[in-house]
Length: 459
Image (cartoon, rainbow, N blue to C red; front, side):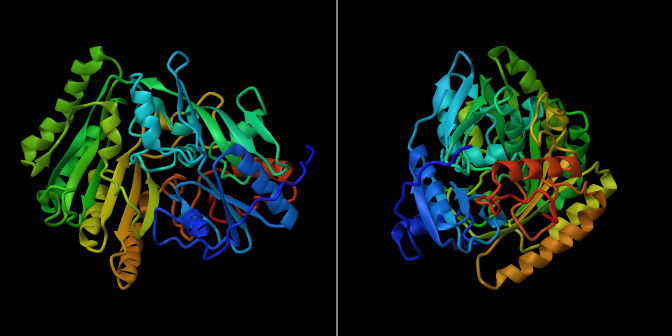
């Protein structure tokens, strides 16, 4: 592939306003320190930035919203391209597809699709960058019905090390298309994607909460329900220590540690609403019958409401997190884990997210990461409210990891594995080797060699 003639671009350096904007991260604990930055507002900016980096002998890194910054390796000496392409989401309601440019947040995609009665397999927060989430697999509340979000990718437009822009799909450069879907990156800078959309008339969504002291009874009933839950339903069970945020949360949820179950039930067509209501009743009635909840907001809602269900903060915060994928849990195992979670007072959140359904099924012509092996995804988060809180959070997360380790599958999900120092394994050995060979072929000089997400503990 011939290299293009470099077109120099203006580089920002530490201290410049544009530099600070480019290195900003959603997790305020992340500190990025590239040598220079470029804010790319169009694909041509990306091409010129890559060619400039090649001309200067620099490595290239890329980020959009900065949600995955904690998993990034050090950027000393590199050029960071902040992809903020100024292009609208384009919906094709006949083909059921959406075109998304780099830097687009899920909220924009959700709103554009909702106007046509359609949904994407988006994440739990509207502030997350759509493309980074998709390339890392993506675990949606629609996932048990429709599978890993990366499986919804239909084409990917990428600028490679030579400055060439190529569009890959199942029929065009299929090996690169395979690698880009969960293979860890390091192949170039993705500037756009096309994804499959799905009809969705309504969702039934919300949160139901109890005092933390009720966890043993409620969690056991929830675990039993997950064993036979229909794929239309995806839920998560969480132990929460929510800080009072004026006007954002009901007081009953911020008065001490609570147990919460949230999620969604898909209603693909208006005719599916009665069946979905029955799923909700089968899910909630045993829980409410056992112990009266202190809060319950589950109700029929438009699909555009779903990004608010998980109550992710809409603004950057400083946190420390950990993640595992867990295998089957019986009541004894779940009890031990919840006892440990209830004792970790420094943590903002302990979460078990329901897996299974189509999330566990390999996709036809799927990518490097196209399924989840396991029954539950664990995610633990501590809020760095003070400089002194880090030590307690790290200790509590380590204690939880120790308790859960007997049930760990040994694999992790790319969108949840935010700590680069923690053991991680997204790909098996064969997929890891296949991705590495392709990476070496498409980027022989290694300009993107350090722009790789953790996909194996020794990578």
